[in-house]
Length: 126
Image (cartoon, rainbow, N blue to C red; front, side):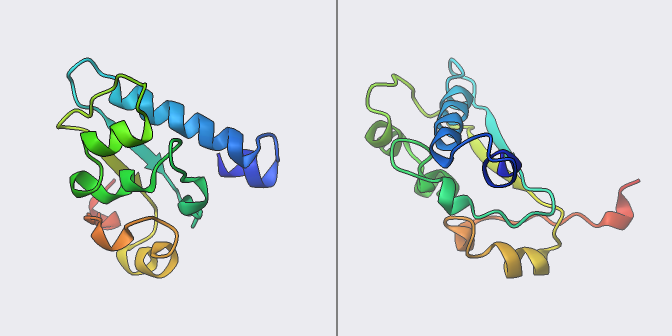
């Protein structure tokens, strides 16, 4: 997505926001079964805040269940008929270690300070 919008310029930022909205809505439309939405950042420090917008890909999605609730879903998508499933999670993965993550992503991800972190020891993975 980053490459399509900022490097190749095959897609506008607005088109990317629409695509993210559709991905978010389809990940929540699970007929009663919670699903996760995975954002793979690799080794980039993409400013995800630029992709956020009310009624598109709300920043509250990053805030966990304290911020992303059925009330918020209805506020942003009043005609979608979608109900947030209790098991829904947003998962962000990166190749950064925890220190680099805090250094490079703290101002790029909404509600960064409220995220839970899991750091995997690269030596333990073959």
